[in-house]
Amino acid sequence: MKRNFFSEPARLPEPPVDGPSEAGRSHSWRSGRIVVAALTLLGATGLPLRAADDHPPLPRNPELNFSILLQQALRLAPEYVELASRDEEARLHLEAGRSWIAGRPTLAISYLDDQPRTAMGLTELEYGIEVPLRRPGDKREARVMGENYGAQASAWKAHLELTIAGRLRRNLADLEAADRILELERQATAEARNLVQVVDKMQAAGEVAQADGLQARAQLLQQQRQELAAETELVDAQWMYSALTGLAARPAAAHVEQRTAANGIGDLHPWLRLLRAGVAVADSVVKHARIESRGSPSVMVGSRRQRGSSTEDYNDSMILGLNLPFGGSSSAAAKVGSVARQKAEAEMQLLAARKELQRQLHEAVHELGQIEESLVLATEQASLDRRQWEMAKTAFEAGETNLFPVLTALRQTRASARELEALKLRQQRLISEYNQVIGVLP
Image 1: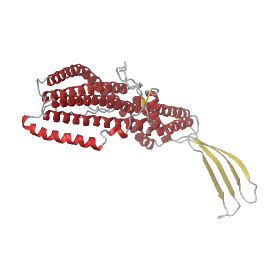
Image 2 (image 1 turned 180 degrees about the vertical axis):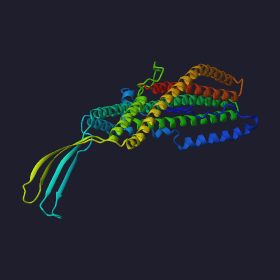
Image 3 (image 1 turned 30 degrees about the vertical axis):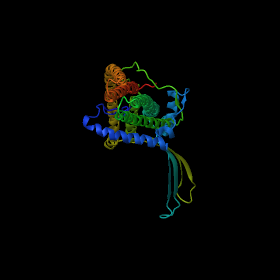
Image 4 (image 1 turned 180 degrees about the horizontal axis):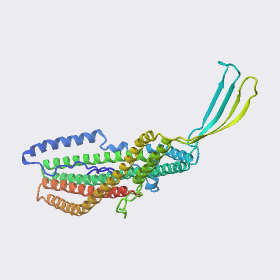
Protein backbone atom coordinates (compact mmCIF):
# COMPACT_ATOMS: atom_id res chain seq x y z
CA MET A 1 0.00 0.00 0.00
CA LYS A 2 1.19 3.47 -0.77
CA ARG A 3 2.08 5.61 2.24
CA ASN A 4 2.34 9.37 1.84
CA PHE A 5 3.01 10.41 5.38
CA PHE A 6 4.94 7.52 6.94
CA SER A 7 7.38 4.91 5.61
CA GLU A 8 7.24 1.25 6.56
CA PRO A 9 9.31 0.36 9.67
CA ALA A 10 12.72 -0.96 8.88
CA ARG A 11 13.08 -4.68 9.42
CA LEU A 12 16.43 -6.20 10.09
CA PRO A 13 17.41 -9.25 8.07
CA GLU A 14 16.77 -12.41 10.04
CA PRO A 15 18.96 -15.49 10.15
CA PRO A 16 17.57 -18.61 8.50
CA VAL A 17 15.42 -20.79 10.72
CA ASP A 18 16.48 -24.09 9.20
CA GLY A 19 19.71 -25.53 10.53
CA PRO A 20 22.59 -27.00 8.50
CA SER A 21 22.07 -30.26 6.71
CA GLU A 22 24.13 -33.36 7.36
CA ALA A 23 26.12 -32.67 4.20
CA GLY A 24 27.09 -29.26 5.52
CA ARG A 25 28.34 -30.33 8.98
CA SER A 26 31.95 -30.45 7.84
CA HIS A 27 31.58 -26.96 6.40
CA SER A 28 30.23 -25.79 9.78
CA TRP A 29 33.43 -27.10 11.43
CA ARG A 30 35.59 -25.04 9.09
CA SER A 31 33.33 -21.97 9.42
CA GLY A 32 33.40 -22.27 13.18
CA ARG A 33 37.21 -22.29 13.29
CA ILE A 34 37.28 -19.17 11.12
CA VAL A 35 34.75 -17.48 13.43
CA VAL A 36 36.75 -18.25 16.54
CA ALA A 37 39.90 -16.95 14.89
CA ALA A 38 38.13 -13.73 13.85
CA LEU A 39 36.78 -13.15 17.36
CA THR A 40 40.19 -13.77 18.89
CA LEU A 41 41.83 -11.37 16.43
CA LEU A 42 39.31 -8.60 17.12
CA GLY A 43 39.71 -9.03 20.85
CA ALA A 44 43.50 -8.98 20.62
CA THR A 45 43.72 -5.90 18.40
CA GLY A 46 41.13 -3.94 20.38
CA LEU A 47 39.18 -2.91 17.25
CA PRO A 48 35.81 -1.26 17.99
CA LEU A 49 32.86 -3.60 17.69
CA ARG A 50 30.16 -0.88 17.77
CA ALA A 51 29.37 1.80 15.23
CA ALA A 52 27.75 3.96 17.89
CA ASP A 53 30.97 4.56 19.83
CA ASP A 54 31.66 7.70 17.76
CA HIS A 55 27.98 8.75 17.98
CA PRO A 56 26.87 8.76 21.61
CA PRO A 57 23.12 8.61 22.23
CA LEU A 58 21.32 11.92 22.51
CA PRO A 59 20.65 12.96 26.11
CA ARG A 60 17.02 12.94 27.17
CA ASN A 61 15.38 16.13 28.37
CA PRO A 62 12.09 15.76 30.30
CA GLU A 63 11.12 19.36 29.44
CA LEU A 64 10.92 18.63 25.71
CA ASN A 65 7.52 17.80 24.27
CA PHE A 66 5.94 17.57 20.84
CA SER A 67 4.82 21.21 20.85
CA ILE A 68 8.35 22.50 21.51
CA LEU A 69 9.84 20.17 18.91
CA LEU A 70 7.22 21.28 16.36
CA GLN A 71 8.06 24.96 16.81
CA GLN A 72 11.77 24.17 16.43
CA ALA A 73 11.17 22.13 13.29
CA LEU A 74 8.94 24.88 11.84
CA ARG A 75 11.65 27.51 12.17
CA LEU A 76 14.20 25.23 10.48
CA ALA A 77 11.89 24.09 7.68
CA PRO A 78 12.82 25.33 4.19
CA GLU A 79 9.21 26.39 3.60
CA TYR A 80 9.34 28.73 6.60
CA VAL A 81 10.98 31.47 4.51
CA GLU A 82 7.80 31.66 2.42
CA LEU A 83 5.68 32.80 5.37
CA ALA A 84 6.79 36.44 5.23
CA SER A 85 6.19 36.76 1.50
CA ARG A 86 2.68 35.28 1.76
CA ASP A 87 1.78 37.61 4.61
CA GLU A 88 3.10 40.59 2.65
CA GLU A 89 1.14 39.55 -0.43
CA ALA A 90 -2.07 39.35 1.59
CA ARG A 91 -1.39 42.73 3.23
CA LEU A 92 -0.82 44.47 -0.12
CA HIS A 93 -4.01 43.07 -1.61
CA LEU A 94 -5.98 44.13 1.45
CA GLU A 95 -4.62 47.68 1.19
CA ALA A 96 -5.37 47.80 -2.53
CA GLY A 97 -8.95 46.72 -1.85
CA ARG A 98 -9.57 49.74 0.38
CA SER A 99 -8.76 52.29 -2.36
CA TRP A 100 -11.02 53.71 -5.05
CA ILE A 101 -8.05 54.10 -7.40
CA ALA A 102 -7.91 51.24 -9.90
CA GLY A 103 -4.33 51.70 -11.07
CA ARG A 104 -1.42 54.09 -11.35
CA PRO A 105 -2.27 57.75 -12.14
CA THR A 106 -0.95 59.19 -15.39
CA LEU A 107 0.63 62.61 -15.97
CA ALA A 108 -0.40 64.05 -19.40
CA ILE A 109 1.31 67.06 -21.03
CA SER A 110 0.73 68.52 -24.51
CA TYR A 111 2.23 71.66 -26.14
CA LEU A 112 1.13 73.43 -29.33
CA ASP A 113 3.22 76.11 -31.14
CA ASP A 114 2.85 77.58 -34.68
CA GLN A 115 6.41 78.92 -34.82
CA PRO A 116 7.62 76.35 -37.40
CA ARG A 117 4.72 77.16 -39.76
CA THR A 118 2.68 80.42 -39.72
CA ALA A 119 4.74 82.01 -36.92
CA MET A 120 1.82 84.11 -35.61
CA GLY A 121 2.78 83.36 -32.00
CA LEU A 122 -0.01 80.86 -31.27
CA THR A 123 0.88 78.67 -28.32
CA GLU A 124 -1.10 76.24 -26.23
CA LEU A 125 0.02 74.17 -23.18
CA GLU A 126 -2.13 71.48 -21.55
CA TYR A 127 -1.13 69.38 -18.55
CA GLY A 128 -3.05 67.28 -16.09
CA ILE A 129 -3.29 64.05 -14.10
CA GLU A 130 -5.50 61.17 -15.20
CA VAL A 131 -6.62 58.81 -12.40
CA PRO A 132 -8.31 55.42 -13.12
CA LEU A 133 -11.20 54.77 -10.73
CA ARG A 134 -13.08 51.75 -9.57
CA ARG A 135 -16.79 51.31 -9.94
CA PRO A 136 -18.59 50.57 -6.65
CA GLY A 137 -18.90 46.88 -7.57
CA ASP A 138 -15.26 46.72 -8.63
CA LYS A 139 -14.13 48.11 -5.29
CA ARG A 140 -16.15 45.47 -3.48
CA GLU A 141 -14.54 42.71 -5.56
CA ALA A 142 -11.08 44.14 -4.85
CA ARG A 143 -11.81 44.05 -1.12
CA VAL A 144 -13.01 40.43 -1.35
CA MET A 145 -9.89 39.54 -3.29
CA GLY A 146 -7.70 40.94 -0.50
CA GLU A 147 -9.66 38.95 2.09
CA ASN A 148 -9.24 35.79 0.03
CA TYR A 149 -5.49 36.25 -0.12
CA GLY A 150 -5.47 36.77 3.64
CA ALA A 151 -7.46 33.54 4.16
CA GLN A 152 -5.06 31.71 1.84
CA ALA A 153 -2.03 32.90 3.84
CA SER A 154 -3.66 31.74 7.08
CA ALA A 155 -4.57 28.35 5.59
CA TRP A 156 -1.04 27.94 4.27
CA LYS A 157 0.37 28.42 7.78
CA ALA A 158 -1.94 25.72 9.16
CA HIS A 159 -1.04 23.38 6.30
CA LEU A 160 2.68 23.98 6.84
CA GLU A 161 2.31 23.21 10.54
CA LEU A 162 0.54 19.93 9.77
CA THR A 163 3.16 19.02 7.15
CA ILE A 164 6.05 19.59 9.56
CA ALA A 165 4.13 17.70 12.26
CA GLY A 166 4.00 14.74 9.88
CA ARG A 167 7.77 14.85 9.41
CA LEU A 168 8.28 15.07 13.15
CA ARG A 169 5.87 12.21 13.80
CA ARG A 170 7.73 10.03 11.33
CA ASN A 171 11.12 10.87 12.83
CA LEU A 172 9.99 10.24 16.41
CA ALA A 173 8.53 6.92 15.27
CA ASP A 174 11.89 6.05 13.69
CA LEU A 175 13.66 6.91 16.95
CA GLU A 176 11.30 4.76 18.99
CA ALA A 177 11.61 1.88 16.53
CA ALA A 178 15.39 2.08 16.61
CA ASP A 179 15.38 2.12 20.43
CA ARG A 180 13.13 -0.86 20.78
CA ILE A 181 14.79 -2.91 18.04
CA LEU A 182 18.19 -2.22 19.60
CA GLU A 183 16.89 -3.29 23.01
CA LEU A 184 15.52 -6.47 21.46
CA GLU A 185 18.82 -7.23 19.73
CA ARG A 186 20.78 -6.62 22.93
CA GLN A 187 18.58 -9.11 24.74
CA ALA A 188 19.18 -11.60 21.94
CA THR A 189 22.94 -11.00 22.19
CA ALA A 190 22.84 -11.62 25.93
CA GLU A 191 21.02 -14.92 25.36
CA ALA A 192 23.51 -15.95 22.68
CA ARG A 193 26.42 -15.07 24.98
CA ASN A 194 24.84 -17.06 27.81
CA LEU A 195 24.48 -20.04 25.50
CA VAL A 196 28.18 -19.83 24.62
CA GLN A 197 29.06 -19.88 28.33
CA VAL A 198 26.90 -22.97 28.90
CA VAL A 199 28.43 -24.77 25.93
CA ASP A 200 31.95 -23.84 27.06
CA LYS A 201 31.32 -25.33 30.51
CA MET A 202 29.89 -28.50 29.03
CA GLN A 203 32.76 -28.73 26.56
CA ALA A 204 35.28 -28.36 29.39
CA ALA A 205 33.53 -31.21 31.17
CA GLY A 206 33.70 -33.33 28.03
CA GLU A 207 29.93 -33.48 27.63
CA VAL A 208 29.74 -31.89 24.14
CA ALA A 209 31.95 -31.86 21.09
CA GLN A 210 34.06 -28.94 19.95
CA ALA A 211 31.73 -28.48 16.97
CA ASP A 212 28.93 -27.41 19.33
CA GLY A 213 31.17 -24.74 20.82
CA LEU A 214 32.08 -23.43 17.38
CA GLN A 215 28.43 -23.30 16.31
CA ALA A 216 27.44 -21.42 19.47
CA ARG A 217 30.20 -18.87 18.92
CA ALA A 218 29.21 -18.46 15.26
CA GLN A 219 25.65 -17.81 16.39
CA LEU A 220 26.91 -15.19 18.86
CA LEU A 221 28.92 -13.44 16.15
CA GLN A 222 25.93 -13.35 13.83
CA GLN A 223 23.78 -11.88 16.58
CA GLN A 224 26.41 -9.23 17.34
CA ARG A 225 26.22 -8.18 13.71
CA GLN A 226 22.45 -7.84 14.10
CA GLU A 227 22.99 -5.64 17.14
CA LEU A 228 25.55 -3.55 15.28
CA ALA A 229 23.06 -2.98 12.46
CA ALA A 230 20.43 -1.89 15.01
CA GLU A 231 22.87 0.59 16.54
CA THR A 232 23.53 2.02 13.08
CA GLU A 233 19.79 2.53 12.58
CA LEU A 234 19.63 4.41 15.88
CA VAL A 235 22.56 6.65 14.86
CA ASP A 236 20.80 7.49 11.57
CA ALA A 237 17.50 8.23 13.34
CA GLN A 238 19.25 10.52 15.84
CA TRP A 239 20.99 12.40 13.03
CA MET A 240 17.70 12.95 11.22
CA TYR A 241 16.13 14.16 14.47
CA SER A 242 18.87 16.71 15.07
CA ALA A 243 18.70 17.87 11.44
CA LEU A 244 14.93 18.29 11.70
CA THR A 245 14.76 20.07 15.07
CA GLY A 246 18.26 21.50 15.47
CA LEU A 247 18.36 20.10 19.01
CA ALA A 248 21.07 18.02 20.68
CA ALA A 249 18.63 16.42 23.13
CA ARG A 250 15.48 14.35 22.74
CA PRO A 251 12.34 13.94 24.87
CA ALA A 252 12.64 11.70 27.89
CA ALA A 253 9.57 9.63 27.02
CA ALA A 254 8.58 8.01 23.76
CA HIS A 255 6.01 9.84 21.65
CA VAL A 256 2.76 7.87 21.88
CA GLU A 257 -0.55 9.03 20.41
CA GLN A 258 -4.11 7.92 20.95
CA ARG A 259 -6.40 7.53 18.00
CA THR A 260 -8.58 10.61 17.58
CA ALA A 261 -12.33 10.22 17.98
CA ALA A 262 -12.96 11.80 14.57
CA ASN A 263 -13.73 9.24 11.90
CA GLY A 264 -13.94 11.33 8.75
CA ILE A 265 -12.29 14.11 6.77
CA GLY A 266 -13.78 17.44 7.85
CA ASP A 267 -13.99 20.65 5.85
CA LEU A 268 -11.54 22.28 8.27
CA HIS A 269 -8.72 19.94 7.29
CA PRO A 270 -5.65 22.20 6.74
CA TRP A 271 -4.93 20.80 3.27
CA LEU A 272 -8.54 21.21 2.15
CA ARG A 273 -8.66 24.69 3.68
CA LEU A 274 -5.61 25.68 1.67
CA LEU A 275 -7.00 24.33 -1.59
CA ARG A 276 -10.42 25.86 -0.92
CA ALA A 277 -8.73 29.20 -0.30
CA GLY A 278 -6.88 28.72 -3.58
CA VAL A 279 -10.21 28.25 -5.36
CA ALA A 280 -11.52 31.46 -3.78
CA VAL A 281 -8.39 33.35 -4.87
CA ALA A 282 -8.70 31.93 -8.38
CA ASP A 283 -12.34 33.08 -8.50
CA SER A 284 -11.26 36.58 -7.45
CA VAL A 285 -8.57 36.56 -10.12
CA VAL A 286 -11.18 35.67 -12.74
CA LYS A 287 -13.41 38.55 -11.64
CA HIS A 288 -10.42 40.90 -11.55
CA ALA A 289 -9.47 39.87 -15.08
CA ARG A 290 -13.02 40.49 -16.24
CA ILE A 291 -12.94 43.96 -14.65
CA GLU A 292 -9.58 44.80 -16.22
CA SER A 293 -10.65 43.52 -19.62
CA ARG A 294 -13.62 45.90 -19.82
CA GLY A 295 -11.51 48.79 -18.59
CA SER A 296 -11.94 51.30 -15.79
CA PRO A 297 -13.36 54.83 -15.98
CA SER A 298 -10.85 57.60 -15.38
CA VAL A 299 -10.99 61.24 -14.35
CA MET A 300 -8.58 63.89 -15.61
CA VAL A 301 -7.86 67.12 -13.76
CA GLY A 302 -5.52 69.68 -15.32
CA SER A 303 -4.90 73.19 -16.65
CA ARG A 304 -4.63 74.88 -20.04
CA ARG A 305 -2.57 77.98 -20.94
CA GLN A 306 -3.02 79.43 -24.43
CA ARG A 307 -2.92 82.52 -26.67
CA GLY A 308 -3.95 83.15 -30.28
CA SER A 309 -0.97 85.29 -31.32
CA SER A 310 2.05 87.01 -29.99
CA THR A 311 0.05 90.23 -29.58
CA GLU A 312 -2.52 88.62 -27.28
CA ASP A 313 -2.33 87.84 -23.58
CA TYR A 314 -2.30 84.29 -22.27
CA ASN A 315 -5.59 82.71 -21.18
CA ASP A 316 -5.55 80.18 -18.31
CA SER A 317 -8.31 77.62 -17.82
CA MET A 318 -8.98 74.37 -15.90
CA ILE A 319 -9.59 70.99 -17.50
CA LEU A 320 -11.99 68.34 -16.12
CA GLY A 321 -12.29 65.15 -18.12
CA LEU A 322 -14.10 61.79 -17.79
CA ASN A 323 -13.21 58.70 -19.84
CA LEU A 324 -15.68 55.80 -20.04
CA PRO A 325 -14.46 52.61 -21.84
CA PHE A 326 -16.99 50.54 -23.81
CA GLY A 327 -17.10 47.68 -26.32
CA GLY A 328 -14.38 45.05 -26.92
CA SER A 329 -16.37 42.12 -25.55
CA SER A 330 -14.57 39.49 -27.68
CA SER A 331 -11.13 40.63 -26.53
CA ALA A 332 -12.32 40.67 -22.92
CA ALA A 333 -13.67 37.11 -23.17
CA ALA A 334 -10.33 35.80 -24.45
CA LYS A 335 -8.43 37.30 -21.51
CA VAL A 336 -10.89 35.92 -18.97
CA GLY A 337 -10.84 32.43 -20.51
CA SER A 338 -7.22 31.70 -19.59
CA VAL A 339 -7.61 32.59 -15.91
CA ALA A 340 -10.94 30.76 -15.76
CA ARG A 341 -9.08 27.58 -16.70
CA GLN A 342 -6.77 28.11 -13.73
CA LYS A 343 -9.81 28.28 -11.46
CA ALA A 344 -11.05 24.98 -12.89
CA GLU A 345 -7.65 23.40 -12.13
CA ALA A 346 -7.85 24.66 -8.53
CA GLU A 347 -11.30 23.09 -8.14
CA MET A 348 -9.99 19.83 -9.62
CA GLN A 349 -7.11 19.79 -7.11
CA LEU A 350 -9.56 20.27 -4.26
CA LEU A 351 -11.70 17.33 -5.36
CA ALA A 352 -8.65 15.12 -5.93
CA ALA A 353 -7.21 16.00 -2.49
CA ARG A 354 -10.44 15.04 -0.73
CA LYS A 355 -10.52 11.68 -2.50
CA GLU A 356 -6.86 11.07 -1.70
CA LEU A 357 -7.41 11.80 1.99
CA GLN A 358 -10.40 9.46 2.05
CA ARG A 359 -8.33 6.73 0.40
CA GLN A 360 -5.49 7.13 2.90
CA LEU A 361 -7.96 7.09 5.79
CA HIS A 362 -9.58 3.91 4.51
CA GLU A 363 -6.20 2.18 4.17
CA ALA A 364 -5.13 3.23 7.67
CA VAL A 365 -8.37 1.97 9.24
CA HIS A 366 -8.20 -1.29 7.30
CA GLU A 367 -4.58 -2.00 8.23
CA LEU A 368 -5.17 -1.06 11.88
CA GLY A 369 -7.91 -3.69 12.03
CA GLN A 370 -5.62 -6.29 10.50
CA ILE A 371 -2.78 -5.49 12.90
CA GLU A 372 -5.05 -5.75 15.95
CA GLU A 373 -5.93 -9.30 14.91
CA SER A 374 -2.34 -10.15 14.00
CA LEU A 375 -1.06 -8.92 17.36
CA VAL A 376 -3.11 -11.54 19.19
CA LEU A 377 -1.67 -14.33 17.06
CA ALA A 378 1.88 -12.96 17.11
CA THR A 379 1.84 -12.63 20.90
CA GLU A 380 0.78 -16.24 21.30
CA GLN A 381 3.37 -17.36 18.73
CA ALA A 382 6.16 -15.51 20.53
CA SER A 383 5.13 -17.06 23.85
CA LEU A 384 5.12 -20.58 22.38
CA ASP A 385 8.50 -20.09 20.71
CA ARG A 386 9.97 -18.79 23.97
CA ARG A 387 8.74 -21.90 25.81
CA GLN A 388 10.18 -24.18 23.12
CA TRP A 389 13.52 -22.39 23.38
CA GLU A 390 13.60 -22.78 27.17
CA MET A 391 12.69 -26.47 26.87
CA ALA A 392 15.35 -27.09 24.21
CA LYS A 393 17.96 -25.33 26.31
CA THR A 394 17.04 -27.36 29.41
CA ALA A 395 17.18 -30.60 27.45
CA PHE A 396 20.60 -29.67 26.05
CA GLU A 397 21.99 -28.89 29.51
CA ALA A 398 20.69 -32.25 30.70
CA GLY A 399 22.47 -34.01 27.83
CA GLU A 400 19.22 -35.21 26.24
CA THR A 401 19.86 -33.57 22.86
CA ASN A 402 22.57 -31.88 20.83
CA LEU A 403 22.98 -28.18 20.09
CA PHE A 404 21.19 -28.14 16.74
CA PRO A 405 17.59 -28.10 18.13
CA VAL A 406 18.66 -25.43 20.61
CA LEU A 407 19.97 -23.13 17.89
CA THR A 408 16.87 -23.76 15.78
CA ALA A 409 14.57 -22.87 18.68
CA LEU A 410 16.68 -19.79 19.47
CA ARG A 411 16.45 -18.51 15.90
CA GLN A 412 12.70 -19.09 15.82
CA THR A 413 12.28 -17.28 19.14
CA ARG A 414 14.15 -14.26 17.83
CA ALA A 415 12.16 -14.26 14.58
CA SER A 416 8.81 -14.29 16.39
CA ALA A 417 9.99 -11.62 18.87
CA ARG A 418 11.06 -9.38 15.98
CA GLU A 419 7.74 -9.92 14.22
CA LEU A 420 5.77 -9.07 17.37
CA GLU A 421 7.81 -5.92 17.96
CA ALA A 422 7.42 -4.87 14.33
CA LEU A 423 3.63 -5.23 14.61
CA LYS A 424 3.53 -3.10 17.77
CA LEU A 425 5.64 -0.41 16.13
CA ARG A 426 3.52 -0.50 12.99
CA GLN A 427 0.36 -0.13 15.04
CA GLN A 428 1.67 3.02 16.70
CA ARG A 429 2.80 4.39 13.34
CA LEU A 430 -0.64 3.79 11.88
CA ILE A 431 -2.33 5.58 14.78
CA SER A 432 -0.09 8.60 14.14
CA GLU A 433 -0.77 8.31 10.44
CA TYR A 434 -4.51 8.13 11.06
CA ASN A 435 -4.36 11.33 13.12
CA GLN A 436 -2.21 12.96 10.44
CA VAL A 437 -4.72 12.10 7.72
CA ILE A 438 -7.59 13.43 9.85
CA GLY A 439 -5.56 16.63 10.22
CA VAL A 440 -5.14 16.86 14.01
CA LEU A 441 -2.00 17.62 15.99
CA PRO A 442 -0.91 15.76 19.15
